[in-house]
Image (cartoon, rainbow, N blue to C red; front, side, top):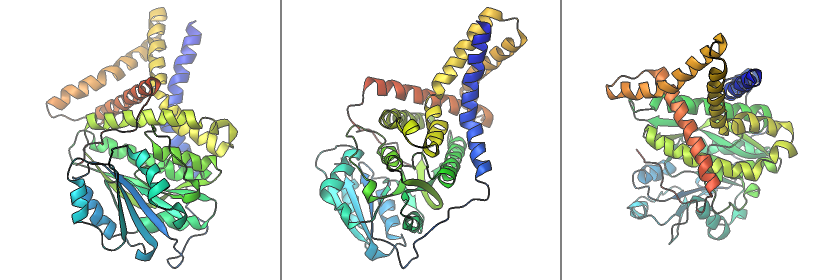
Length: 396
């Protein structure tokens, strides 16, 4: 029994270490010296595209967003902007009318009943705009600010007919000194690196950042009305149809976050619920498609979604081993390390109240907190998701 429990303990910890440390390291090693290559559109060849985004109560960010759109350097005759207004109850609609971009064709589709982002997009694609009018659709969140050349960088690789989706790199702008500013920026930088390398090595970025990505119109399908992560659903559909998903590190956008552990916890919980919806819909990709999809899907996403269960399993087996054979040096050492891991978040909370911040403690608390959010998201998924309507993350 002790040997069996020891194997379970080592195996569960090893999978978590592989997911968070070894897999990214393997990708970085294999991708050294590589860069995106292949046929690219020149400035004279750029296709007709649409920039599409949905907005609910975005009065804090919508004016900056509209001004940013006017600064994009995509040819004005080749870009139409479509905004789906999800029946806001603040000043969003008024601010839009007062700040309509002048450099591009700008179309507002105001829906009279709130229905959630996925349903807004479905209605826009079915009734409000003709997908056949465009080669490529750029999806972008309402709070995203992009570099002037972002659209060109997103579109240029679509000259290769194998490319079905190109994702942008998201850089978080978080208030300096906020609770988890450094930790969230570190996490996003590593996620961006993984996505870029997956695209380079496999042509299979497993889920573009929903904040901003471009997708070939033929790969756009109806999004289930209750799905919370419509971007992930469309990304995996591209892979399902044997097209490439890549991430262009030169396509950069910025997202402002509060840096609040509480707000990020709620966001990760909602994302987790949506991820399990998508796992059920696309788990077959692991064994029905070739390894270039299955390997990163399992290594990057599936193992991460099940990390909370692996962590919980390691805690249970560690306690069981200590009860059975607490005199064993290895078991005693493992038990002490487990206690330190469980106690350290509480220590970080105590130190925070006296304005002391220890980065290692904060990172560990952030890691455990986000895994708890993933676990609760799984519970929410088990209970069933009836609607994709949710309260947006607090804006800066």
